[in-house]
Image (cartoon, rainbow, N blue to C red; front, side):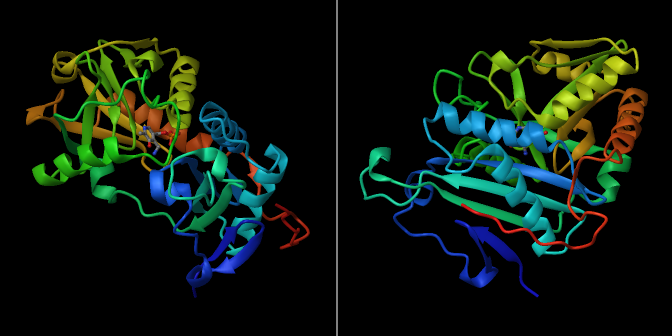
Length: 303
Ligand code: PMP
């Protein structure tokens, strides 16, 4: 059975979930989105994702025609409509239908889409054995352009890097910023561990302020591990004791080779293992509840 998609105030079957060819999300990548996860009947870090969606929209000067509370309800109801309690959720807000020019003033109403679907994960083997990644020639676009903190529909920068990873036969690519500092991956943030200290690139390097990244930083601190949000280069990657990536879909995934250099002893490290178990516990904590005790009560979503 196909999915039911939230589209501008209604739930429609997947095959009818269509957006205009004049939508500036399609024509220009003018819009923002979120990738969210639900675990065991509750949405993980709902507030953080909804806040980031509205911040992204604010920076591109787009007013989402729903309150944050209404958006939260749309996300929950999309899970309910699809009877999903563990899923990956995509919320998208584009500038909406305009004309062929790029002026956003011609787009009167943003288009809102929410999709809840089963999650496709990296194979289990990669979590056990670790992942091979490369650094790629494509640099992360700088904060002075489209700031990577905006989770925008303009992912071409990341797609270029993904193509380079594909050509090299590896699942992820590390992008450096214009100065050669490590920024992040195409769809994940990056961490290294050196002499017991956990380090991750600081936000000003130019990267997405990842929800998982922030949870991992908090977890590490709670475990008494020192965390530094800092700058580092490929050199630091190669000599790290451990490297791992974080993201909503990937959670925490270990990296065991970078540009063919074996990292540490070539297997997931002890700090990574501790953080992964901590994270797996964290996602069990109740968040925004999808189905309430009273069953599959359906509430109406208004635009
Ligand atoms: N960086 C980029 C470029 C991303 O697209 C993502 C999300 N897939 C991340 C990092 C990880 O962010 P989060 O933990 O919020 O999913």
